[in-house]
Image 1: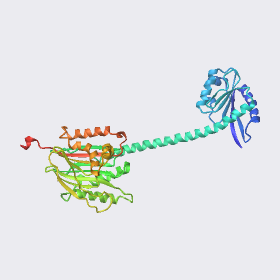
Image 2: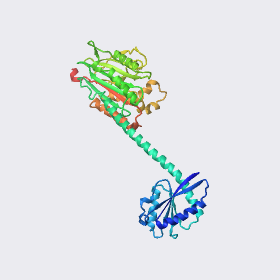
Image 3: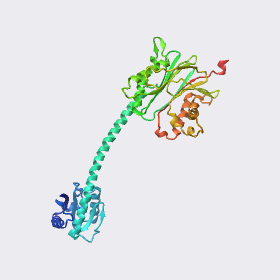
Image 4: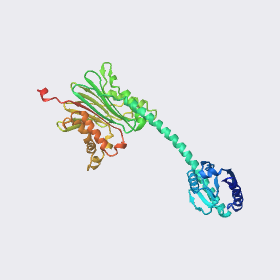
Length: 424
């Protein structure tokens, strides 16, 4: 047999009357399977007049409050508001039956003290049944609030950790690009989140050689970012001199590939990369590619561009993979552009509009935005950095820029054109 709790609240005189009503409630109770249990609370008339919060006892009981005739109406309304705010079901029995009785507001009823036992018992029973549901909801809400508080703290902690990871990752990329006579460098690096699966580097190896790479770890978020740390360590440009000779791009990628295969632990870790070495005096460049979008050689004055197809397999698949090299001469006025595949998602519209698109025409659609970087001299830009800045503005204007779908990175190397006076 279930039991409902009903708390009788009133002054000394009022409580005696409520006890009599309680006997009638027991007799008229509409459900024989559930009986009310009555508790008592005596309060001072002053508390009723002031609508004290001591009335709103939140213990799951339904309150039956005896309100004396001389209680001011504002105090009654304030008490109703107080009980509603505390989600407490109650019946206010008014001695002054000329008041506005029969009011129902948020589980609080006002009834005349002369209301019959049958009606009062049915009302109290209904509120008791309602209060059980409310108590369950309040309990669930309390658990939810505590849980969400824990989740919020966890999210804040993860946010702080990701922020720290982002700071550490940015230490792996150069703070400043090299300043080498006859060459100009520009980079755009924009992670999709706190950390990035893209990484790049460009450093001077010796008096005449510059090493550079761009890599893209397959995946997103923290796992991809952790993989970039392995890539950065393996492609240590300053350590690219072995036994007095430059480590070739092919050998550098082969080393990285073996490292990724060794640390797989049953969980494949794949990446793409382009690694190159440029002779700053002659413009000769050796490039090896491991499944990455091909670098583009841009001749601004001729309005032409060429993909450097130094094709090699994806990194981290098989040991002893071979990565063939391509040797080109970067002529004065030409730019080499390396980029990650995130640009395909940033500028998709034009590609979708191309009729009868082939793989090459589809690629060229989003490359149009990138090629403006290499044509900066022909476009009258003051520097390669200005062209990079223009591309950043286009990224900001692109659809979905606030929720970038993938990391985007572009690295440009320009060989300054020889002026007519110098040529003479």
